[in-house]
Image (cartoon, rainbow, N blue to C red; front, top):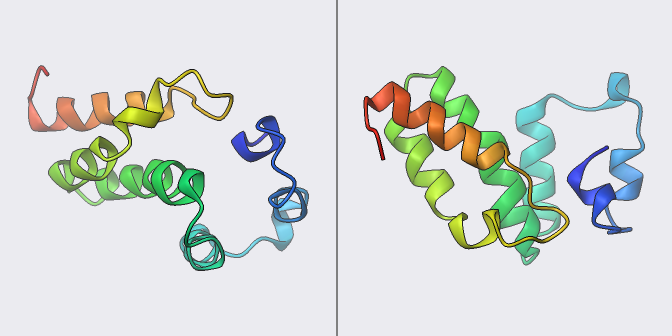
Length: 102
């Protein structure tokens, strides 16, 4: 179940309920959501960074991944229903790649 579904947000239900075989590639899917919900705090400051940071790690850009994830620290452990541990995990992986024990 996606974070959007857990939070009870109905605007994401139609996209989240689509079978995965019909979804566009992750990059275009994320770009579409980012454009469709430009003022949505959860999309812009939680979902987009959480999905893009691991891609930066795979590209060997750990510093960029840390920078992207750092923007969401205030939301990450807020206790909100949508807040999960994915950003914390990605940040930890990026710090390991940077050999940074922060």
